[in-house]
Amino acid sequence: MARKANPIDIVVECCRPPDCCDMRGMLSFLILHLLSKRKMYGGEIATEIAKRKAGKPNPGTLYPALRYMEERGLIESTKEGKTKYYKLTPAGKEGLRQAKEYFVQAYGDIVLESM
Image (cartoon, rainbow, N blue to C red; front, side, top):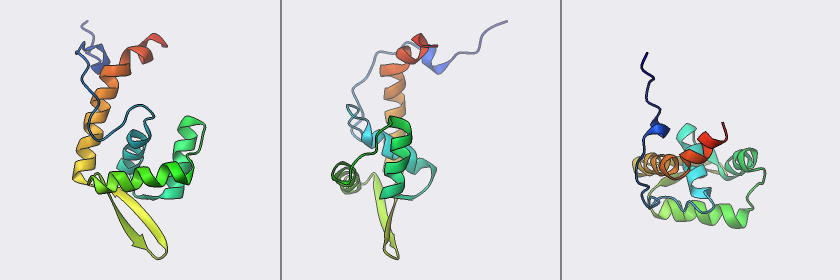
């Protein structure tokens, strides 16, 4: 019986990181991923990142990243009362798609080796 192709099994020459995400620290990638699920305020984003990286980004790291991503049109913010919420834009959704593709190409073999 033929095995279904796993996307990670596909050998593709690795591309350069997408413009949306600086993959060195992966903060922007994580932000885009989290905001693909629902809109969030900064504290929620920091808490969710802490669950994944075992370290909560400080405001001096998180908010400049959010501001930069908003300036680039990847996310947008709205105020609800005193709380500023962030959500993905269509450009952010496309950026996340590209970042996921890059991540699989660049790091998929590491994941497979650990299984």
